[in-house]
Image (cartoon, rainbow, N blue to C red):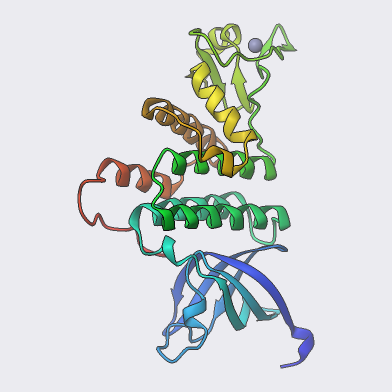
Length: 283
Ligand SMILES: [Zn+2]
């Protein structure tokens, strides 16, 4: 194997699936973009790479370029295994959701260092939370903040400051209130929130749903505040649920289908008292 064919990269494993007798196909988030590669023999008990190629792990890799197929993992050394995220159903499901959103919004060969840093940081914070046993609302706020940042980086940044509505053919642009009772609207098609007047005028449009000023305030905070500051923030369960519904609606519109792990995450929370609900197939 000539040295020109080899290259080194850092990578986070966002998805893995078995291939053939003993191989694994890995979907990677790297600073150069999303890649799909193959780790030959990774499922053999004797494989030296196997322990380094866990889901959510951040890994230093040497890869061999293949002109006709997936690039091949030649060497792998885990820099951070994020082990706490695989041993726990709740934190693990949040981690899957975070990784899956990257996978769904970023197509192969796209993405770059900012998306890699975001995913890496989000998994680090989630790992710390798992180690310290920090429960919701901090977990939910982390995920809401991650969604906002991811959407910004892939070009779907939601507009929470000014009304995205149009009246009489002109952009509205009013500053949106985060206090008061008058319902606002969420319009994923126009990419943000609507003032009360534009919401009333647009209520018959298929994708427009109501949004309370308090939920808008929470989403705005998640868009602006660093992850560390959000850990201190308090939010009542109904408000968290509304913010989650709003983001699910927004993401679904842009993905045109529900995010699979998101559905599972909601089941886990509903059945939190039920022991050992089945995890979805790792793939
Ligand atoms: Zn308006």
